[in-house]
Amino acid sequence: MALKPSFSNSKFECGTDEAGRGCLAGPVTAAAVILPIEYTNTILNDSKQLSEKKRNTLKPLIEEQAITYSFCHIFPDEIDSINILNASILAMHKSIAQLNTTPDFIIVDGNRFKPYHDIAYETIIKGDAKYLSIAAASVLAKTYRDEYMERIHKEFPMYNWKQNKGYPTKEHRAAIKKYGITKYHRKSFRLLPEQLKLEL
Image (cartoon, rainbow, N blue to C red; front, side, top):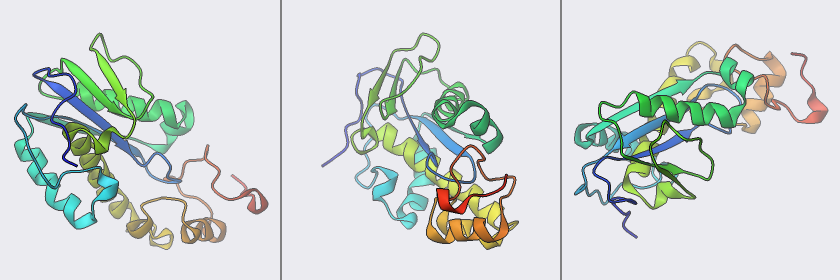
């Protein structure tokens, strides 16, 4: 099913989404994208439905064809301080703030958001599989976050972030148990199951 170009028919409708909310390490990353009203793209979809190769092919196309786009990382110390939901929304707000054009409507993937200034918005469950601008934001958030995780993988290769991107895989949890945690881990998250308590 083809994704819809817009929700509101506003000229500068912004889609926003985040990546990395469920990870044990690394930032939560959001992106915001305003696409031209007549924009079409038959490949673009929710980033989780796309292969890494397709996401990496789409990223420069989205950046070239968007009216404006932006992304923002919120790092583990702030996630631990304000909690992951607030950090996700803050990342979206900061991404919107960095756009070159002020949106006149915002569509958000999911069901939680806080008003951004006085701009009208709509939360849309599974919005990244319904609207092109949210799908575009999901691709940018995911690819920029993956690039960051691949960079910090070089610093701590034993956690294999290049592969697991900080998600709670068995391998990642086994490495936490063996090596402890790094400055990139989220201390407010349950890093190990209860029976494998970690001294923080």
